[in-house]
Amino acid sequence: MSAVPLPVSLWRQPVFSGLFASTALLALGGQIYQLALPLILYELTHSLSAMSNLRAVEFLPNLLLAAFIGVWVDRVCRRRWAQRSLLAMAAWQAGAGGLAWSSRVRALA
Image (cartoon, rainbow, N blue to C red; front, top):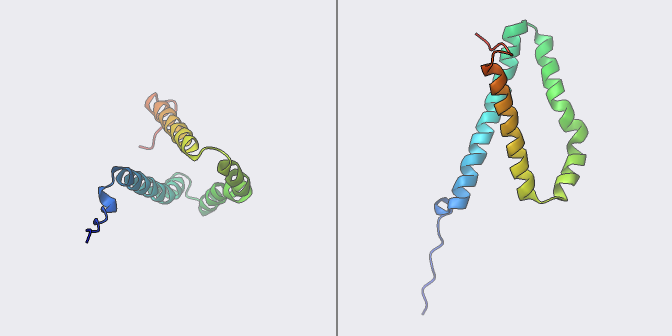
């Protein structure tokens, strides 16, 4: 009788661990962004309508472009698409940080 090998735990797979950690950090960052940005805008403007307009402007691209972008993404290599989008996000963040650091954009005090 041959012994059946025990399945390897998913948590011991390095690829899964990296994927899980990056997805968890991305989700955490997104939730912090969704909470902090309207509060920062309210602190700056003291306007509830500005907060609601911010939410509408954030949601509008999802509503209008989601179907088209979904079809386009399904036709390209997902790995390259994910890598390029992460590089673009990192570049935007570095650019925003560079502008804030050089005092061209006044940071919240």
